[in-house]
Length: 467
Image (cartoon, rainbow, N blue to C red; front, side, top):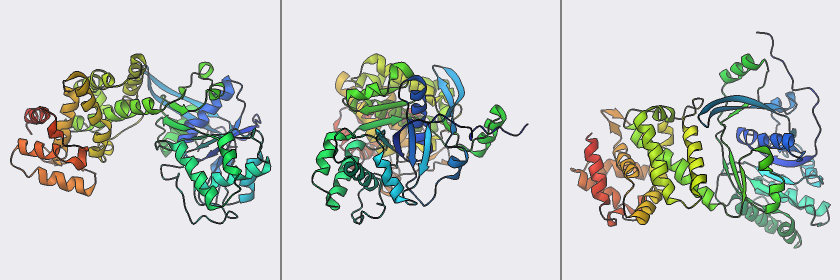
């Protein structure tokens, strides 16, 4: 084939830097930056993103070589149709590293166009490090770097309340906005910053709790080569993302004027309370994943895709979601059913190989958080048991025997959990096994033997399995 075309050094439209982003990774580039590209195309947003590389002492070379441009490949199933498309993202204006030039980093705070801070520094990123006592040096943590930046803005604009920012952390922890703000407050106190600084933060900076949802997997070398053959374009920064995306932001109504979902079609919700959406994700998406694993694995199925291709397992998962999980949730039924349909499409994605054994990591604690509440709520509301979820519970207990048909199951869980189940499966009969498992308060947060008929139902499913 001809040499791939390089379009990355061509001039591009210069836009005001409205977003400062902490993190150069795949997720934000395939999620938030992709959204900003669409906002620029379809609304009056007209903004670019400056990215902070906050680790190490370098800037990723490919960003500079490609003039900060890259493609997002959208691959998956949407509304039952295969999607295989791509979009060029041109909204990144630059990348810098405070470890290389701390003064340059602080000067970013002086930009009057700046409106948003976006971050994804992993779950371990929002921490406080009490040894970061010298403000003349680059703080170790993300909250420390943010506190230094906000203080620089406070000083430069002389405490003017019209120059505040909206902070949108995308770290996968509950109340991420509140925890990030707490970190900034801790650094302000540690550094003994002027008393007027924290009131300025309260008056001008909005720390939003957020919930993000999109699979943005890594992009192996062969996929780059496939992309070059297909498009004739060379791109070493390309990221692949599933079609589904959802960003819930617990923030003010004014944000709706920025994320104009009616104009863009972006699945962004500006809400007063994230909890119903978090519960929806945990119970339907995560819960179905967790419930699927033991049922499918014990049927010699090894991936999510294979499970969805199996007629019996596919119906099992669909019925579990629609008939047993959704009736326990309080969002509008149409909204829940649309989310469920999206989840099933995501499970069927032929471009992502999701191993069941990978999902099985720490299945006991996952089951307690993601599935057990649905069982208990269903029982509370109807007086009956959700049969599919109980079958999954029984299969989970069988799964933790660690072997099936003479084949070892590579269980991955806390040592105490594995030791417990190893001892349990040495007992002589199913009744004793199930009673011991259900009585373990450390696993389930309660003695499940107290729920009438639950033990008998679990035993029944294990007897039906027979192996």
